[in-house]
Length: 64
Image 1 (cartoon, rainbow, N blue to C red):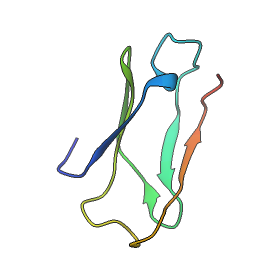
Image 2 (cartoon, helix red, strand yellow):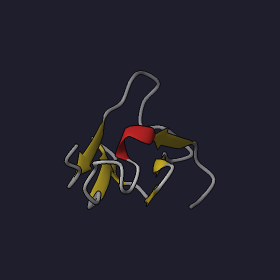
Image 3 (cartoon, one colour):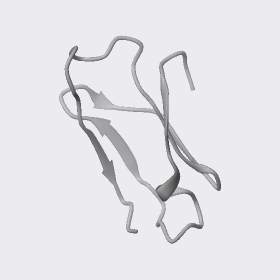
């Protein structure tokens, strides 16, 4: 993973009732790198966010 901020999502940890995550995207910004570990789903944001306000992530394949 690169230099952007990493966001952990503990509810989507591998083996924690969550199915395997297939893809993570930043709405309006494209796909994001991620790792799903026993500690959580770690999503890396781009170094430059697409906007100064709030943004949304689309997580595909996760069933909790």
